[in-house]
Length: 389
Image 1 (cartoon, rainbow, N blue to C red):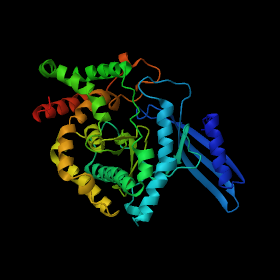
Image 2: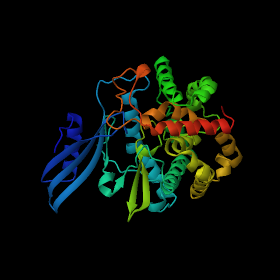
Image 3: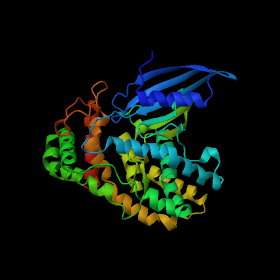
Image 4: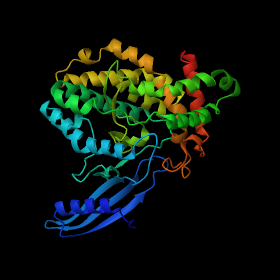
């Protein structure tokens, strides 16, 4: 089945075919359903099949195309596409150069999907990781420990590379890294959206907890912009949306072997520890955190330390352990914030995901899987126990 591609994307795919010296070829494309996993673009699976001088050839492509003339009051859709295009067409090359200069073995480098030169602010055009055996774990499930470990290792490398750029490319760091501000417009529409979603989450609590904690929970969610804009303790490039939907996994003989982060549209210069907390509280339950949170935090810091050493950088000079622990403790309730108003999206029933580009955010209403209630109640109980609320 072939779905018609938007004109701009069609032209890019034809350009790829030309550069690969196809004598003749067919373009086979399919619109991909995201089942509530993506809200910012239309996804396509595209295969170029044909003949070159050396014989039959096939190129497998994943593309995310912007929806023209759609306005979002809480962020700019063209802006987030521009950011992601910059990551794949420019930042990825800087990462590669730095890791080659430091003689980092390929298997130890930060992993990214390869992009095509035609990748641009309207069309993110990448190698199709799905055709290489990668998949997404289901967004509502508690993540497996091995997946959490590999994902955190990649996150630590990603954050460490900002410190490397600061050390090795100081002018580029000043011009291109610290200028990547978070994409949200924290105005009236944002607060109306957050209030709507947070009230839905709070209504999932037992009546006694809701009565005692509603006001402070609403205040926590209102503090989200402060956390996003605060780089006073430490700053790096942050993924901004580091969760199961955006980390592809490959299994070999039933065993997880590799993960690759994707979807850098919310990338920003901010506090890296927020990425770690965001990942943990999006994808784990109370039992998992009780058993593994402390060790995963150590894994994150230890991986960053070891990766920076390969570039001749002492982590104590850029992120001392005592500062890391202080910021972690101060920012831990970021996990409560994000689940309060992003959690309903994470657990949106498949086939019933909201269209945030057309619906009124302050009154957004959709069906949420029953598993969300248990997950949210557990997190609220934990933060009460830890003394945050």
